[in-house]
Length: 130
Image (tube, rainbow, N blue to C red; front, side):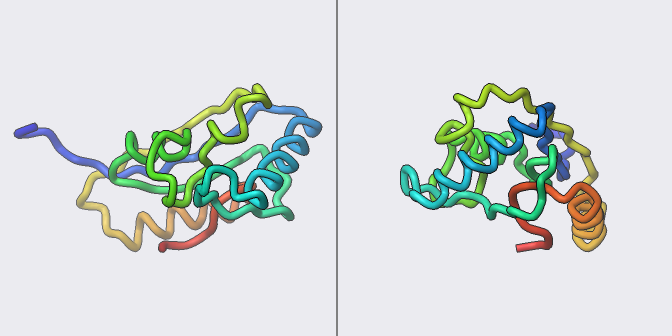
């Protein structure tokens, strides 16, 4: 829309779950990714990160990116694809999105995302720009 400013986002997907539920999450995701369920490109699994933080990422089209994480976007885009494996876990998720003007430089966005990734140690995804 004319006159509407565009933004970039850094986002965090976090779960509010017990250690048992986090372990169930790790098991279910690992099984789904190994089986290559639905021919999807599942995010990287970080087995050494037993964290309530699931994912740290960035996007300029956050609606599209969340659609991919939910499993209703492109199958070959690396994402969580939650609808393929997480529904039966019934774990509440919290999504926090930090909004930045397009005038913020790419290297600043990358540094902020990497700092969050290092501090939160998400269970899924990878550190660094693609």
